[in-house]
Length: 330
Ligand code: SF4
Ligand code: MG
Image 1 (cartoon, rainbow, N blue to C red):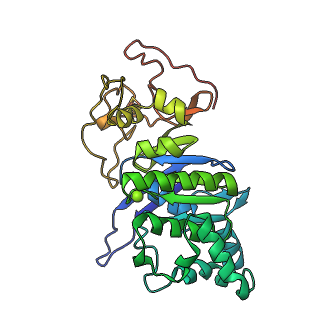
Image 2: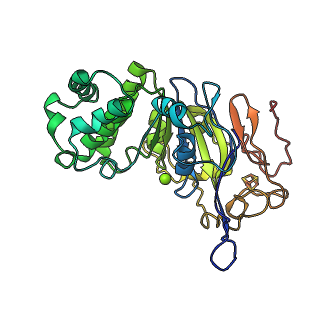
């Protein structure tokens, strides 16, 4: 709720303040039990920072993160440790996130040691169970990370995330470093684990195909804010925010449907140090209107379950007709 993360703004050597970089700005979102919320946006839009704030790897500047109604910000010691069992993280780079000097067995039993779970004599059996759960072999237990392929290493990361039986996994670009054929294997594994373990995912990716495949709902981020959230199918069938529309139109369509309505995005992400006035997308928006450069749009519900932060959402593409969008409450 209202999650915000700013960097900088500290006084440097000569008494000058470093500029404030607004990475995440007033983001509110919800992930339901057993649900996958995909988070998409260009690199640099704040997705990873948001994921890190939610999983308590980084402290937000403002806002609140609640898990099952319990505030997580500011937790310390045992309370923080208990929370860590509920929310786990998987990173993009399965090479960098596994200690190369440790065997798979010791990587996977580390959490048992830290959290004092299971008698030591049972650790090996538990690790073997975990390996089998993610499609690896019991004999892999004494091997080192470099002996595995990228896809297998990501399976090890997933197994490690499962050691504490979490309810939510924040997965930051978990398949982006993998070959396309391996990507779908890992995604399918994540989806079947979701069913068997009742997991919720916050699935961060810049890859729309991947997000479409795995998500129940999608949140689109631009420049540190959520600009649109919706059920996956509705969002891909008819994006309401001009930014979402341009993101989708950049994906080549296959089959009979041709990409006639291609929208080429101009310019780059604005500087986070000097954010644009009004709607932060206005310098690049092909649909901008009168209010856009001066008034910042709020995220609001314009159709049941569809939230968009735009003065002129693309409701049936009624552009230039002076049509007033119909709001369905806040
Ligand atoms: Fe474009 Fe205006 Fe909507 Fe921003 S508020 S996305 S500039 S139409
Ligand atoms: Mg990132």
